[in-house]
Image (cartoon, rainbow, N blue to C red):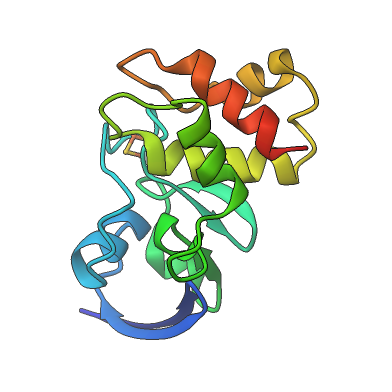
Length: 152
Ligand code: FES
């Protein structure tokens, strides 16, 4: 059985018929071809799938799409304005806040949430409030420095 779902993704209206078990992550990647949002663990442990839903950071692998009727979702594809990168994206480049890059979309989305929540006042705060986003390459010093810069 499928269910009708309407919501907004990166400012665009989306209407889908979905299986009620579909996660937001699989909806984005497999139904909308928005593959910038990454699947790491698929169980809420790594943060690679972080998106903003109504401005709040959410692990998309743990969120059921059906629960988000009418929501506004922002993914990494919705951060830049056309080809113009946003300050947090430029800051990740400036500080080399990545190595392989797999966790980077989630780090940037979570970093945006962290700043918006007022949790980016110091490097200690940033490390604490970004602790749900794992980087296997260990690029943490650059990630924290980038978010600190973007928060200014
Ligand atoms: Fe969602 Fe790891 S893929 S937290």
